[in-house]
Length: 448
Image 1 (tube, one colour):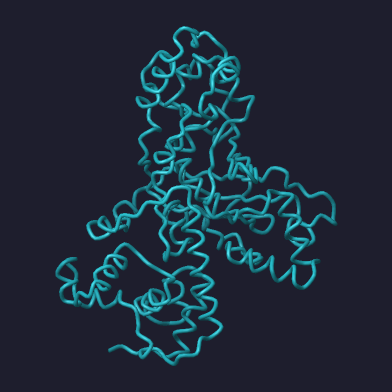
Image 2: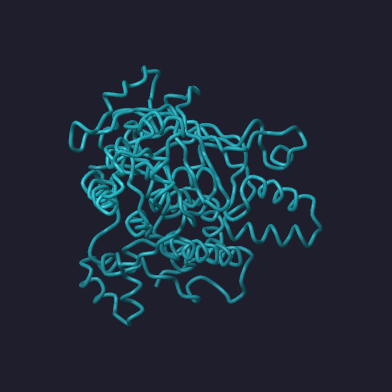
């Protein structure tokens, strides 16, 4: 039986709560990743498909040897995923670190229950692994893109502005990030969540600026329909398909889950983002209103007369960023080049210089996405290429949090936790902590 000292056990929890990384925790404490992993599994702070499959069978009363045979793993491998017992790591009194880990578990519980769509497939955990192969990891990245992400309505309004006094903001809440050139809009969604501190508990969308949308569609419904499946997703309320990969499960590190989502190689598993399904929806919709001859109407007329079922200006999230956003100072693509009416399933090509990301339609968060001209180092570029993972290189302002009431609610929140009564401060900070907000000014390179 393997024993671990109480002090080391608590140190592992403490460091992991800071880093969110098993490997980095092991390196900092000069110990083995397996030992770190077992402590975290014991505390409910870390999990994987393998650990979850083993846990299911272990809790059913199966012996280590039987689990090993069923999952085709060695007995030592199985043991490395089993939690420690109290006798293996110390006494009965809970340390401050143990209390913090309890808060962390409660936070994960909140995150798990706040996801727009939740899917659990224990059987698939035991049938296939969730690791990305080294072959895919080493796949060459053609190019990288430097993005500037700026939160709308976050411009500083004088030195007394709470986001200046308490929110570490100089100009506006923004991030500059290097991303692989083939990153999809869907993966970029997870990057934005992590960079701004949101928990994926609300709906989101990518869209064009209003003037760009009007220019691309000529404001006509028939022109718009031809671009459905090329750039746009025909309005739908099929959230199961929109959120096809919202598979976060309680007990797993939320930061680890997010990183898995925004690390390449990238793919898109939803079915409704492709050309044929969109054109099917278009034909079905037009068939319902054949007597109105909707193909000859403007988009505005259609929206005034008929409920489309959603915003027509929603971009397909399967699109690579470089397929819709100009990466350099190219001249505008001629309108006739992007006319999708003369080819079935025509590929998208860059058409705009700015995208809009919206999150939580209640709080109304909006992020403008443009190509950044900020300088970056060879080391930062090499990190993205070698790890197939985005890297934040500059930031302005602290992280935000969910359900705070948008930009003005966030300002009020900062005032309350710094200027409110002692009771108000304590109550607000506790609420924020359960939503993952720490108030720490994290360096850009540690944001992702």
